[in-house]
Amino acid sequence: MKRRWQILLGVLFSLGAIIFLFRGIEIEKLTAEMSKFNYWSIIPFAILETLSLWARGMRWRVLLEEKVSGTRLFWITNISYYLSNILPLRIGELGRVYLVTRNSDVTGMQALSTAVLERMLDVVTVFIMLFLVLPFVPEHGLVTSAAYLIVGAVMVVIMGLFAVARNRKRAAMIVGIGSSRLGNKFGGWINEAFEKFFESIDLVRGRRVVMASVWSIVIWIFSVVSTYYLLLSFSPAQKLYGGVFVTALLALGIALPSVPASVGIWEASAVAALAVLGVNKETALAFAIMLHLIVFIKMAILGIIGLYLEGENLNDLVVQAKKLIKSMRN
Image (cartoon, rainbow, N blue to C red):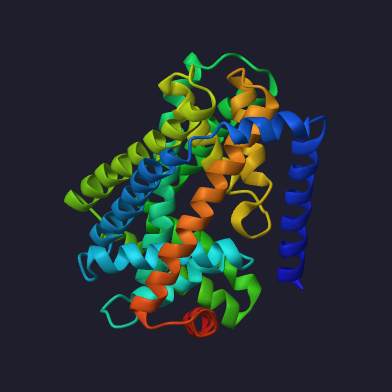
């Protein structure tokens, strides 16, 4: 039942975004903007985007204590994105946890905890980017106000997580009191998961934290440059901070519930960001559609290649990923 509600919520968010996108749009202008696109620019964009994914694999390798090669993690990352683009409930995250534990010394909890840590590093990097460029972005009421509010809220959450990590015993006691009300089995699983999560996080210290942070910067530099490069094809007057702003809002937007591939939400995030930068809706939507389409096709190609190299198929991978998560709960 919970999964049905999650899927329904995603559908509603995506439908709402699509209605927002096409309300008042002039189709003739939209098609005219898309026809101006220089398709040769896809090649450098795809190379830059692929380098960003390669850097993700290298960062994950650092977090996993070099137990898995960077090349294999690159392909697993692509498989994860491919799955999330075609299946609901972001099943790709479960898929990559299963794949990285197969034929390696990586445990399920270590894979999960490093995946969470990756998200934290991404969030911190994206919000630093957003914080740095917001002073250059024209004030645009709701969008910029919401951006400032979200930056503040996320920073508070991150500081809270660091506080929990530093006072783990006290936090574990509080978690234990709360989980005791949920029954022996479920409460015990929560306590064990809490301990294993922070044990895995504790492995990532000193040099590894620094290296993972450096790779996070590399990841988002490639992502910003690729987005900005494609943006110039539609809006040549844009400054670099515009590319940073669009990339950051895209990263935030696709975190919202949606149908697979963030259809609608992706485009709405890009259009909202470009509206702040003074780009008309037709041009902004043409850019968003083209950006999303290229990324989707590239992810599909790399994901399918990755599945072949891993000797997996979609059905078996989804089944095994779900089994792994169930086994971790028992």
